[in-house]
Each structure stands twice: as C-alpha cells, then as structure tokens.
Length: 448
Image (cartoon, rainbow, N blue to C red; front, side, top):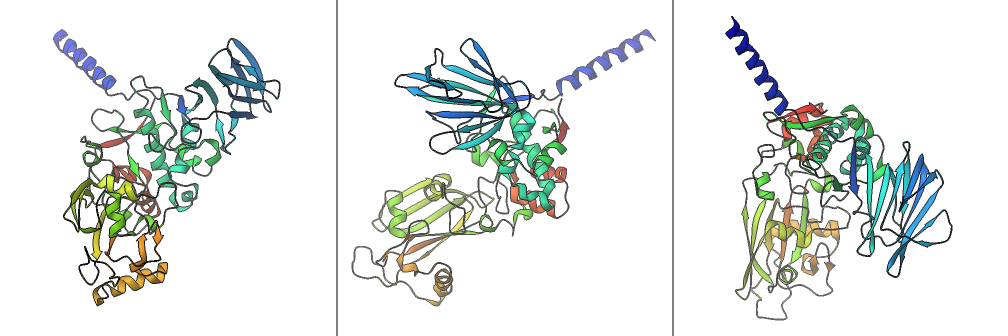
C-alpha cells in the first residue's frame, strides 16, 4: 500500500513539473517601444502633456508635470539642450530625460518637420549620435490598440470584428515572442517589428483588443508562443516560412488560401508594365530580350533570369526583383509591383531590332490587341510609349518591346493573410477559426 501511495505521489509530482514546463512565459504589463518609424533621427522634439499627470525627471531633479506642460529638447552645437514650459533654454547636464506618468495620460510629440503623434504612457529621451532616441513606455494592451487598426483598419469592425480579434491575438503573440529572453525593447516600425502609431489611430478596433485581452497563440505541444507572422494578402496561397526567412516553422507552412481569392482590390490582382530598356538598365543590362522565372510550389518567384539582346544575362532573387519596382511611399494601386507571386509575358516588336535603329512599330497581332486596348482604355497611352507603370510614358516610341507582370497578393505571404482573415470574418468564421486556418499546430491560450 505504501509503495502504491509513493508511486502515486511521484506520478503527481512529475505531472506538475510537466505542466509547469508547459506554462507560457508571463506577459509584461508594460512594453518599451522605440519610436523610429515617424520620430527616428529627431534633432528637435516638443512634447506636450495632453492628459494625466506626469513627472519630468531631468538629471537628478524630479518636477511635477501636469496636463498643459511642455518640454522642448534639441541640441546646441555639441550638447543637448532643453526648455521647460517656455522658460529659457538650458544645457542638459546628462543625456537622458524621462516623462513618467503618475496616472493614465497621453503625450503629444511634435517635430519641426511636421510630425505630430500622440502616445499613451510615458516617454524616455536619450541623446545619442546627434539625435534624440525616444522610447514610449506603455501598457501592453494600450500598445496593441495602436497596432491593430494600422495593421488592419478600424473600418473592418463593421462585419469583420472577428478578423480584428485574430489580428489582436497575432499582434499580442508577436509582442510576447519578441520581448522574451530578456529583450525589453521593440520598435514601432513595420519593417522591423510591427506597425505602431500610438493613440492617434485608436478606434473601433480597440474592442477587439479588449475582447481578446491576454490571449496569445502557443504551440499545441510546448505551450510556448509561436512566431505569429502575417501579411496583407496571400494571393490565394500562403508561403512557407523557410522560403522567405530561411528556417522551417511548423506553424507557418504553405497551403492554398481560397479566402484571399477575389478580395482586396489592388492587392488581389495587379499588373506592372515595364519597357525592355528600363528593365535592363535596372539590373545593369541592355534592353531585355527574355525572362525566365524559377518558382516555389506556391507560385512565388524564387529567382528571375534576365537576358538582353547582346547575350548578357543576370539572375536576381524574386525579392530583389520586387524591391526594384515596389512602390515605396506611394499609394497602392493595380498598376504596381506588390509581391513575388507573379507571371510574366512579353510583347515584342514586329521585327528583331537589336542593333538596328529607326524602327518603332510594335507587334499589332490579334493575340495582343485586346490587352493593348485594355491598357489604353485604363491608362491612355499606347504600350509602345511605355517606360514603366511607375515612370509613365515617353514622347518617343520604345522599339524593344515591353514586359507585362501579372501578379497576385501583397507582401511576403507567410502566416495570416489579413484580407483573407477579413473575408473569413464576413463569412461568419470566428477569430479562433481564422487563427486555426492560418497557423498550424497551435492553440489560443490565455496568458498569465
């Protein structure tokens, strides 16, 4: 009997240890966000207390800083300077300042260049390398309220609230994953971590953050947070993480995504047209004569092989090719290059004109006439005048042909497709259904 009791005790202890090992890491109530997206490399900054009561910590001095107070920081030659409530400028003895909130409040941050953003929580300022580094210390759930509506849209709350919930869980999981193992600071940059725009963008999406408060995605075996990746539009087929980031991930694998097909406007189907000379000069070649594409099973391009009319060739990765024509800083439209899921066709001139001059007549066969007419109707000029969709037209005809890239999707395609999630929500799926479809071998878990 004693042996049975003893064995039972050992079994219970082992079970408890197993459960303890499977417990996800605790979620921080506060997160530090380096403000590089809109406020990186700022030399002069003004911070106004909009709401709440703060303390301003300058060197070894702590001052009361209630609503209506103003702090200006800049540089005076070689040293950082500051100005408090319109008083005289003074040289800062140290290189660090902090606005620490006593109760929930918000701060408006402005620069001479016209940047104007409002943040909840407090802000730390550090003078380094001739500019101010700004770090927003904010409650993690308030942070997510500044992430979800800019990664998706507040407008999606009407008929798509479940998609916003899925985005909230994915963004929270990303936060937990990227602040574990001692890392305390993430950035507000969509190119480095995930987009964060502070209180300015808060709206109806905040309800999705509150409805999923504390929930994260974990591996269904280890209960550890996963790498919850996402992009705007999968183009109808998600991508394997290994094909984009170089390492396998059982939670982010490639599979058909019918929910992203037919939705998303410009992101769903796009077309980019570029003349052979412009295409060649982009990659150090003469007018391109032919293009070959190597692809992953999803249809995304691994590499592009270009050959010009002089026998010279160049091979670039699909991502490098996309970056050469991606509309950075421009409005997304159907005549743009948005991802690596594409096919290509060439409209050649009527004669082989490499090495010849004076010929400007383009192929006018029935095969291409409908495509030409379609482009004329939408854009106006003839294909023979095109430099590229982004550069517009030339006054002279382009005698070497044009290449037409027909593509689908927007972004890397790994993990959740945001447009697909929105479509699923409109079809009646729950946020857990959405997460289960896009992330394999996972569970939604209420973090501690």
